[in-house]
Length: 154
Length: 299
Ligand SMILES: Cc1cc2nc3c(=O)[nH]c(=O)nc-3n(C[C@H](O)[C@H](O)[C@H](O)COP(=O)(O)OP(=O)(O)OC[C@H]3O[C@@H](n4cnc5c(N)ncnc54)[C@H](O)[C@@H]3O)c2cc1C
Ligand code: FES
Ligand code: FES
Image 1 (spheres, protein in one colour):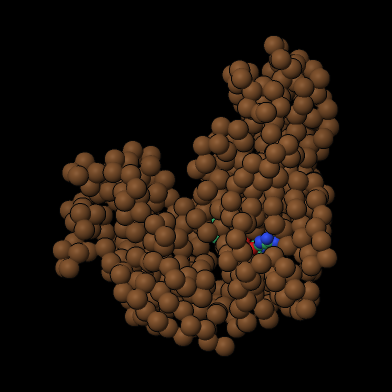
Image 2: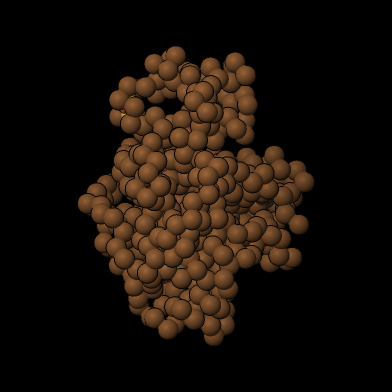
């Protein structure tokens, strides 16, 4: 049986009717239609589905959408400001921290959750923050540099 | 790794009280699963290892997501407190170091923000990282049904891999850890597999207190995970240390005894050898923390 669910995604309130079996990831991608958030493993291992909920990075493949009722959620689409890339996104471009790009939305969300709460993270804190994000292309060194450069600038 | 599909269909119930959750459990015995953080359950459902007709969400029940002082009994941790909350709590880091360290080790930031301490125990995996720490700290569980509640020491909780004494209509609500007495300290040491999830291969936690003014071990508890069908205490190693003056040599001997108490199945020889190493490190660190802890962390 479908249930009413209200989600605020990137500042927009969505009033939906959702089957309890739907994960937050499925609802964001398939019902709301924001496909920036990626489905990798669907079991909590890879971090490509990372979104920020209640200021914290979470794996959206491990959350029932009905349990996200009333929550505030930020996805990769909510990171840029009216077409102006976020400094983190600029830094990923500048540092060549993107290869195939599949892990990038999740990486950016984990990095954003970090710098939103900690303006001058140590390198160890950056590594810890992205420890739940796998990059199959293996671009970790550049990703860490990109994130560190944002703290250096701001 | 098992093939993964989308979640099967189920009816979802959001319980607002423990009583309500217990009522749903007892009216639908065998068909219900409790959902806390979902980091184990939803994966098991996607793998079709578990296909419940009903899923009860606990998150709307107030009071289960707090860490509170509970007088003489000690610190009371609600079952829904997340690994992140425990790992980041200064009080936990200071007074219950082994538990903060274990929770910091679990999964990834994205998993620690969802996964709960109670879910880790109720899932009852042999490699549950919070278990050795809670065993070393002498944790007592509050289990509740519609008929009432009971208090059970953690070492009586696990009955086998992924099984516990929980009745079909019973919930874990609180985990109480007594304050360590006098000059005390604790530590958790582990080795992991090298996979995407870095499951613990051998985990050892120790919590001990010293007699005032010297290095005599007044009390000690040692918890192990991943080296037996369930998390266990290393009771013989504990008795080797209790009441004795601690030395590196004595800790070495106790660690070898702990190794003999472990019953690993796969990679048995390696795990047994590593039990000795992890126990030695955990007891030594707990000892040094206790010795440095002049005022004593307890009350
Ligand atoms: C990528 C990844 C990495 C992980 N790494 C680790 C790790 O390193 N170490 C480790 O120990 N674990 C690890 N885990 C496992 C998991 O995160 C933990 O076991 C977690 O603590 C489970 O808690 P939960 O709230 O998510 O439980 P859920 O998945 O909601 O529930 C787990 C089980 O317990 C039952 N249950 C939950 N709460 C209660 C309750 N109050 N009363 C009765 N029954 C209840 C549920 O019905 C279910 O059977 C990992 C998981 C993932 C996805
Ligand atoms: S898709 Fe969620 S962690 Fe991989
Ligand atoms: S850039 Fe390809 S997975 Fe990270």
